[in-house]
Amino acid sequence: MMLPQIAFFFLSAVTLISAVMVITRRNAVHSIIWLIVTLFSVGGIFLTLHAEFLFAVQVILYVGGIMVLFLFVVMLVNLDVALKQAQFNRQWQVALVTALVLMAELGYGIYRGHQGFTLAQVTATPMSGGNTQAVGLALYQDYMLAVEIASVLLLVAMVGAVIMAKRKIE
Amino acid sequence: MFGSYLPILVHFVVVVVVAGAIMGLSAWVGVKRPSREKLSPYECGITPVGDARGRFSISFYLVGMLFILFDVEIAFLFPWAVVYRSLGWFGFIEMFLYIVILLAGYLYIWKKGALDWTR
Amino acid sequence: MATGSNMPLLLLAILAKVGVVLLVLLTTIAYAVWLERKVVARIQSRWGPYLVGPHGLLQPVADALKIFFKEDIVPTEVDRVVYCLAPFLAFSLALLSISVIPFGESVTIGGATIHFQITDLNVGLLFVFAVTSLGVYGVALAGWSSNSKYSLLGGLRSSAQMISYELSLGLGVVGVVMLAGSLSLREIVEHQSGLWNVFVQPVGFLIYFTAAVAETNRVPFDLPEGESELVGGFHTEYSSFKFAMFFMAEYANIVTVSCLATLLFFGGWLGPVFGPPLLRALLPVFWFCLKVFCFLFLYIWIRGTLPRFRYDQLMAFGWKFLLPLGLLNVLVTSLVLAWRST
View 1: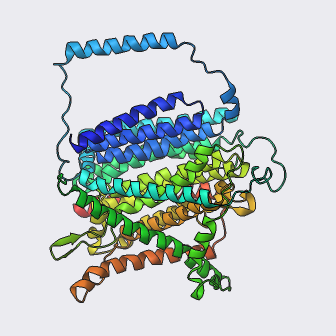
View 2: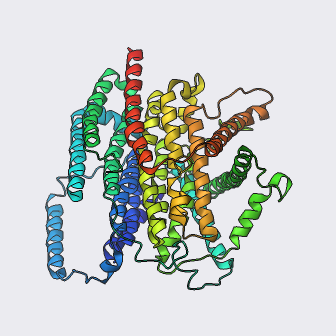
């Protein structure tokens, strides 16, 4: 087996196992640590696709940004109380049925339409001039409108964050 | 590709092994004379009162949220900066609009006092 | 990419390089502490460590041995796993980012090319930032797991400070990236062969350096460990080598940001090169080390001179001054660049 394939299967296994750990831990901070592992290995999968920029951004934004906020929130929850509360997973039968239906739907879709969609092939060699350059050119030449809309989205998020925080204080 | 990331993997493994070994060895070698007072959380010599985890100022969450938003913005800046020379004036106008929109939000949160720590 | 036959050889070469770099880094950390004690002592008209070895030169060794054999106290009611994970994370992440730092020009001796760098990444600069952004976990998890009020407050303050100044840290270097058109640290240095970036991007440098001091929790931004109000901050409950690991991580981070400042703004290994081939090969490394040493000295000098900020001043400075200044710097730099190219 080739090295990239080994890397891919290893990282996928880590992603799946840590994702299971996230939802089975009772201590919320432990869940977050496992979620960090999940996001990190997803970043590793980006690397196997030669998407270096995406890897860096995944680590900086998701692991180094969003998870810190999660941690802030969870750190201040009184965990002793949370640990003693009964787990409310009594609806697991419903969840199981839903998951099975979804799986059947997906399987049917793939069975019927697998000629219709082709999976993108991984480029064997990284793009010339580097991945970041390619991302930059794509973003700021072909998708410039999307970038500007993204900035409006950030503006909305900023306003929303302030309003939410304000309401909680008052 | 893998050629340039393999050294990082090796470096990472070496660092983890070294750090783990030192930490484990030191904990194993050190003397252990535990007592109840020694093992209680430090609180200037008095008996600890209450639990350490409680409610904290909303400012910490707000800083966290604003940090993510500006972090996303900076993540957009890097690919732009890399190809800036080939974009020229077009790239300048694009980023000017982008930053002006964000500055509007920045001024709003400043005016609303979200950047003031003491309120 | 390496084929199957020379894979072990390649791994061995990488291991040797990693070993040398780590050894040098750890020695630098140890003697940076010694240097700090000496210089701060002289600033305060004291002598500093003097007893162990000539001029106290063996003091780091004595300290390391002493701290290694100390009792490792794990207080009751801590979250044991996270409590042990935090110093481990802080220490290993601090040592990780050195892997993309180039120390000198590549030289060819007898057909073999030697790169003074563990690996050259296309996104080297972003890699360093990614690792730096993870550093906040060591602090936050240590503060949370200790189950002590001082630790939690210190950890929270520290992580809020670190994420705030991370923004300015990133903004400060965007101008440099624009000039070089690359995120590879090697290419950024090579681009400065005419003029060092500090002369083109003085504002960017000041933003970067200020943010770097805050990011490493150093004076005057050492609020998290303000001993007069928070005892020791996030590492209040740590003892023995676990404490030492936070300590070493702090100095490793100082070395990293000093290396990065040298590479991004002060031309890295560039400097006058002359003499026989061997000297030619080693002089760039010497220039690099000299510049990094100057930065380390500057750090210590700042510590010996400046008082501490108040926390609200610190946050206001980061959010209301450095951040808009960084954005302005990006806009002005791009305006000038676009003007010049037409």
